[in-house]
Length: 121
Length: 368
Image (tube, rainbow over all chains, first blue to last red; front, side, top):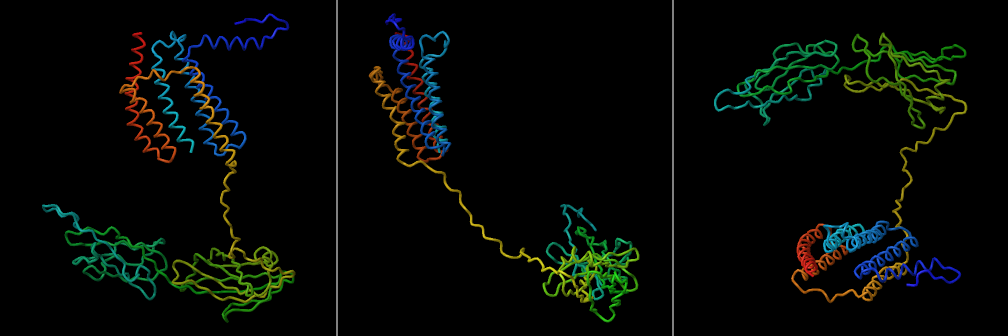
């Protein structure tokens, strides 16, 4: 990586971003990148639902809420999975293997989608 | 009465019931005897029984039946009133029953004695207040009278109600003025003083506006007497009064008996929905990131080739697909009970397979 570009004038904002991107690409394990892609997908879906609600109004409100909260909760569960599968965090999560984290993730999603489908009306 | 039969095997007594015959609990000049009959639950009179009056007192302490045996037998008894006194009495009856019968539960009978009353010492006076002059003074012995009144007139109507020689006060004593043209009624309650003399004292200067609504015209005046101890209510035609009021008003129309305006129910308007085109576009937009996700996963090199084809693997992935299918079914309209029932079975299978699969993966990782 280039580090700080020493040319004049200094461009600190762009350099921080490009450095962050390079470090992310090289240092992050593949499994976490897969989860990150999933998280990005969830977030974009949530944003699109929110924009739709802003455009056309909140009727029926329960449907909007259930869809939006589904994305929020899925995002949260994905973040939990990511934290628990990060090899850098094994000291914190001593008893929870990656497989156990994944099983929790699946189970929580089953319950979440049952409730969401009930509420969506 | 014998009550419980003490012979073996124990037999409790037959309950009996007292019935008042011929509506004779209302004693009047035409119906002087109280007739009762003692019956068993099937309605058959109890033979070999006798009855007596224990007491029959009214609220004032007077008695309508003398205490003593009632005439009749074989379940049907009667007793004649010793003297007719107006009022409501509580008659307590006693019985001698053959063995095996219980005393009736309703051996206390409420007896009412009704007697007519007469109008006595009536005076109908119309006085001109300004001139202090008596316009009309009639004792109503010749029937209803004719009179004229205006705003300076005062009406004094005295009377008493007599039951034989004695004056009585009754429950409802009203004087009713009915407008002959509009048929509207004005009621005044007659008050009795300590000597049981009723009076209606009406000053038309104030009453015309307050009670009559300033509606003039011809009114018929009636005396209405009602009470529980009268055989029927009395309506006595007292007078016909011509009430002259300057600036007489038309009576207010009575709208209470006319049909109210019809209410047409407005059902709740459904809320505005966005046009289907916009909804379709956004549905597509929401599903689009899923495609993007698949592409990104492929680019990142997520490997599907590493899936082992074992029983637990098939069970786990199949179970997850089955759960998704159940949820889609639920969304399409199956109710929650059926969904949870199906889910329970599939969830157990999925859980067991998943546990085995993930444990084997973990073990394989550890061994590496």
